[in-house]
Image (cartoon, rainbow, N blue to C red; front, side, top):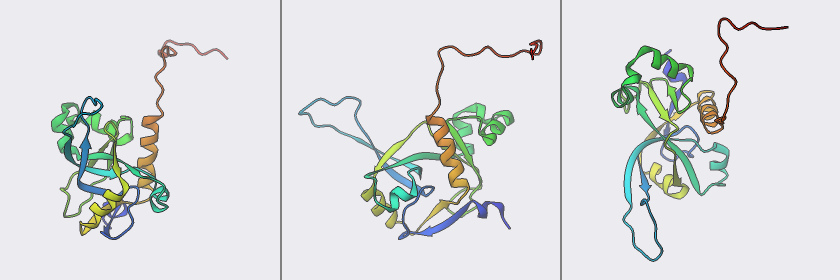
Length: 182
C-alpha cells in the first residue's frame, strides 16, 4: 500500500468542507494598506493554494462566518524561495516539526499534484467567507482532504505556532561544563 494513501483522500465537490481540505487557486482579498472614511478603494485579489484550518465541527454546525485557511506550497518551490530549505539539515528540521512557522506534509501522489512534499505556511493566515468558500468548492469536481491523525497533527502544529511566547530574558544555555547539584 502506498503510504501517502493513508494521509489523503479525494472528496467530491458536494461533500461538506472540513479542516484539512485543500482548496486550489482560492481567491483571497488583500485589503489596502490604509483605509480612510468615505473613500473608495481598490482591493487586490490573489489566488493561493490553501488548506482549511478551522475546526470541522464549527464548519459543519455553521458556527463560523469566516473560515481560517493557510497557504501551502510544494517543497521544491519553498526551496527555490528560501535557499536554506535546500539543505538536508533544514529539511530534517522541517520534517521533525522544529520550524514552528511551517508544517511538512507527505507527498499526495495524486494527479492534481506534483510528486513533491507539501509545506503549509502558518506565517500567512487568511479568512475566507464561509458561504463563498462553500460555493467555490462546489464548482470544482474533487478536492484533496488530509485524513486523521495527520489533520490533527497539522492543527496541533498550528496551535504551537500561535501559542509561542517570547520571553524578554531566558535561562542561559547549559554548557558541557555545567555541574548539576543534587
